[in-house]
Image (tube, rainbow, N blue to C red; front, side):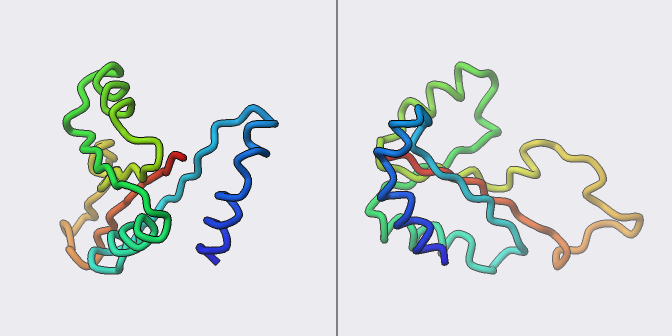
Length: 114
């Protein structure tokens, strides 16, 4: 299903241009550590023959920092933002009994540009 979606997207460049939309695609991957999120991203990059850029939001202090980092990515690229839930400092990440590593969920947000 994912390969069908990637192939459909790759074949619709002219459609995006015609309707005036940026030609990009995004996915949100989530789940416990070790469930294959990073492996899936690597497989997609290999399939598409795209570069991977890892964005650490802790290094972004202002909009111009983010803009500079995004401009530095190549046109055929996958941008990965790991642990976005931690970077956003979400509240109530612990229950009354403390944290349990088995219950933690890591988020990966990525998009690719062509």
